Length: 112
Image 1: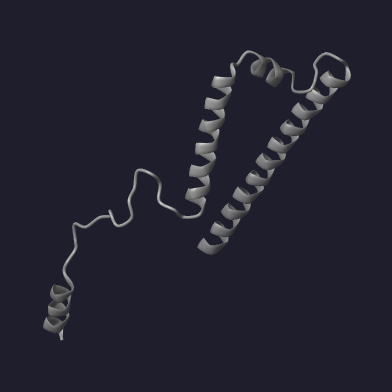
Image 2: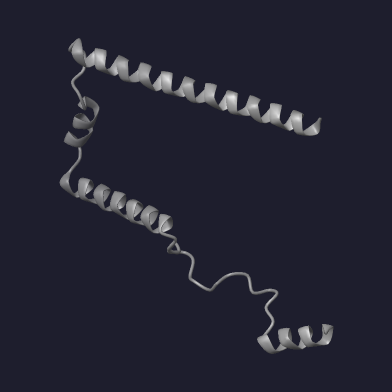
């Protein structure tokens, strides 16, 4: 009986996740359609916001922004590859329960 209840709860959760995914996808499609209609109606040019933003920036500010974006991408790639982040060095974990190998072997021998 408990197993059936868990199975029903899981089915409800999966259904609600599927409904949520469908709602999100529908909203994204609606936004894309609205943007496309605005472009086709001549109300807005593609990438108009981005062009205005870039036109107001100086080359130095754009270079700084690119360097910042590059650093973020490299950090994200390093995290995905399992590399430690810049603030964490390898081997600096929790050493509160450390015992030297000789102490471990002595404890094992004492148990036997």
